[in-house]
Structure formats: structure tokens, C-alpha cells
Length: 480
Image (cartoon, rainbow, N blue to C red; front, top):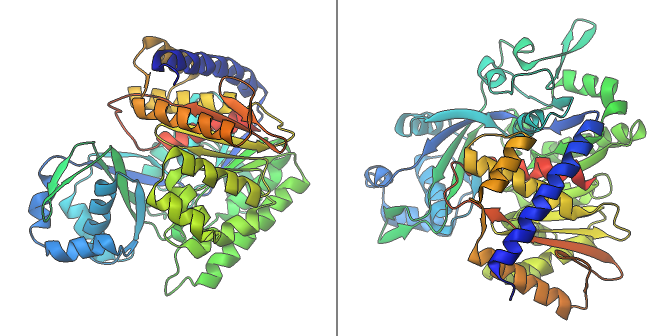
């Protein structure tokens, strides 16, 4: 087993090298599209004892039963509490959609917002990339209220397509505000590791994470703004990368059927194919937590040969395997999501989907796989993604390259014992599978090349929200 200090040293070295590479790539990058989900995150930081008074108003046995058989959506107040408590008990990040305005108002009344932040992959990535000084970013914004516009990074790099009559222009968010648009609010409940809640015994959170309760009628239908569609036609020849997400939010409802969900996915596939007719654009799909696995399955199968790469975390990996129908592997990983089983899941996805690369990023480590011939050294992509996320965890803000470098040199980041164990377990399994080690963090066989890197983490992150999106921003810049 490798020593933590040695691995830590090599990880930090890889991250510093990745920052140097990023500086060159950013100067060459013409523009990036981020789509489709932009929203407003209303953060509430859960405190010890806060939930117990509220839980006491409900039947604890009923809540526990809902945690065992989760509804995966929020219609009534008990659904919300069951989802929040389930996330806290497992330490897994989850997102459930609110389907009742009365319940939405009850949540707002009982859990006042501590802070508003930019939310949604498209919006967060736009801000991260702007801080990294990418010259032009075109985010999709389904509803551009005044509050939403204020949450974008100030500067000249973020541009929103705006249509006035027959004229199309690209404006800063503050100049593109649509006065009639309503704010799309996602309530984020952040909890620390070790938080205790009495519920038929005592629940103790195993790790820090968050539960998201979303009230968002546009993004839950994957609404796409017409000006965005027209604007991308104008600029697509100068776009190098599109990072896409938001499919996980779609829901079947009275006014939006399952057939409508599938049609919207088909529409985006046609849109991406049209982009590729006029550009060398690369398209990265970042998954999130799906509550409808049929929609996830349709996304994976339909977009398989249209997108270039896929990003996901360990929970989303388990969902993918389930949605693609491998019951034996799903049951094994779901019961025991240890590093060896996650590696098997990753390799299954790599052989099932026809993509240039796939990356799984977790709290402790990340794994990327590329079919041969590998076009890029994905070690740089992993290292940059990790360093951007780590700087966010340490500082609580989105950092530029020099600020990230300072964080790396301060010595506050460390490889966790769990991360090192996971790294060594995967390295051993790869050797047993006949992979040849081809570098400090890589291995290969005749069909593919893998990169495995433990993450340098910060014990007390100022925020867990957006860390995955920070990773995706850095990974996307150097992976394609």
C-alpha cells in the first residue's frame, strides 16, 4: 500500500501541472455553451436540533416507512421530510421535485433561506468558467428574472442571446432580464457530518451533503428558450465545447406526459446533431440524480452516439447500470458500492456506451476511461477538475487560476485514508484484470486506458453545493 504522503505529493504535483496546461487551453478556447438548467439555489444550513420540533408534528413511524419506500417526489409535507431524512441518513445527495405549491410555501415558511446562490449546472459552469477567464460563455437560462441575472458573474464573458423583433443580440445577463419571468427556486438543505436527529432512535449523518427540493415548472419540462436556439445558430462555428445537463429534472405530470419527455430528449438530439454539422464542437453530458429511470435509460440510449463524453458520480453510476438492465451488477454495487464494484460498473458503462470518454467523480477519488486510441491525457482533466472543486471547498467561492494555485500550495488539502484505500484497491483490481500500469495514475489494456486519482480534499468544506459542477468545468476544459 502506497503511503498517503507520497500519493498526496504526486496528486498536488499533477494538479499544478494541470493548472499550467489549463492556462494554455483557456487562451485557445473560443467559446463554450452551458445548458440547459439554470436556476436560483435558496440555501438553508441545517443545525443541530432544528428538525426535531418540526418532526414532532408528524408520525415518526409513517416518516420511517416513507424513507424505506421513498416517493422520490414531494406532494405533501411528509414527502419532503422523508426525502431530507433519507439523504441525511445515507449521506447521499438527492434532488426531489415539489409538485404542490402549498407544500412549497410550507417549506419556505419553516426553513427560511440563509443565502441565495447561482444554481443549476448551466449557470454554475458559466460563473466558474468566467472566473477562469474563458473568453465567451453562452449559458441557457429558461427564466431570466432580475434575481437570476444578479447571480451571474459580472464581466464581459457571459452572454445571453436576446431577440427583439427581428434583431438578435448577445447581452450581459443584467441587460437580458425578462421582466415577466418568475424566479425558479431550488431549496438546498446542507447538513454537516455528525448531525444528530431523533427519529425512532437517533439518526447521525455519516458525511456532509445536501438535499434539494425543487419548485421549477420550466426546467422540469426542459423548456428551451427560443432566443437561445436562434443564438446558437449564429455562434456555433466558434464554439469548442458544450456541457449539457438538466434531463434529470423532467417529470411526467398532468400537463407534461412521458411521451412529451421523450420528445424533448429527441429534440435535443436533433439540436446537437445540427450543431455538429456546422462545428467541431465536443459535447459533454453531465448526469445528475434521476427519479425516473425510464427517462435516464432513454437519455443514455438516444444520445449515446451524439455526445462525446459522460460525467457522473457513484450514485448516478448505480442508476445508469439499473436503467440499462444489468440486474446482477446493479444489485452487487447497490448493496456494496466499494471501489472494486464501482470499477466494474465503470467498465460496464464503457463497453455498453459508444463514447470517447466517461468519468466518475466521487468525494474520495475519480476514475476516467477512454477507448483506444485515447485522444487526450485525462489525468490533466481529472487534476484540474479536482483542484477547482478543492479551491471552492476551501474558500467558499469560485477561484481563478492563481487563487487555485495558492490553495494548492497552502497545504490544507489532504488525501483521506478512505481515498487512499480506494485508490490502492482499484490499482490492485486493475492489475488482477490484466491492465498494464502506464503511469502514476493510469493503466491500460488493448481496448481502453484508465486514469484513477484520489482527490485532495478539505475536511471542513465551506460548501458542498456546486463542487461537482466545479469538477465538471475543469474536466471539460481539458478532456476534449
